[in-house]
Amino acid sequence: MSPTTPRKRLSREESQAQTRARLIDTARQLFVTNGYGGTSIRDIADEAGYSQGAFYSNFASKEEVLLELLRGHMEAEAAHLSNVIDSDGRAPEQILSELESWAATLNNDADWCMLSIELQLHANRSPTFAAEYQTVWDAHRAGLGRVVGRLFAMLGRTPPAEPEELAGAFMALTHGLALQRVGGRPDPSGRLILVFLRGLIASAGLPDAAPGADAEQAGQIPPYPGG
Image (spheres, one colour):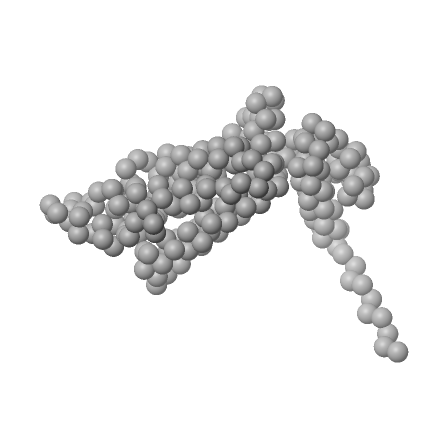
């Protein structure tokens, strides 16, 4: 009989990171199921299998967990889009195709759609949380704005508005449609974002372009399939 391999002892930092991750994941599940207001710190700690002291050693408040969920979601989204745009050696249409693949999964996570509603509702009720919420939201808009700016630059086109303004409009569209989602009805957010993005690209001007160049170049960006 082979000897049992001893379990690796976690360092203090690894143990705390594990506790923090479990508290965040548990809080997400409870916020979705019971709502933010219907979930207490005791609920989160008990469900995660920790004491309230363990919660407070990682988070100052329930609001901090909610912000961490928002920040983690937005950072992951921005990182993924940056990787798509920054990939070398691919034609613009290949990159747009990858963006469409990403957009097809947008708001597929029903739990995140519910959580985004909880975030907005709590921001409307708590001025302190609203200020922190706006800071995270602004940072995400700036990050997506850089992605939008790089996309237009790569295509050799001038954005019809500031890239950060366009990013804010796409965020508002996605968030608004998530709020209107009912039951199992499919969410059109991703498809509509790509429809609008392709339309903006097709209508955008070319820097210092010769007359008629716009019409020539527009053929490089086919319209949305079926559009």
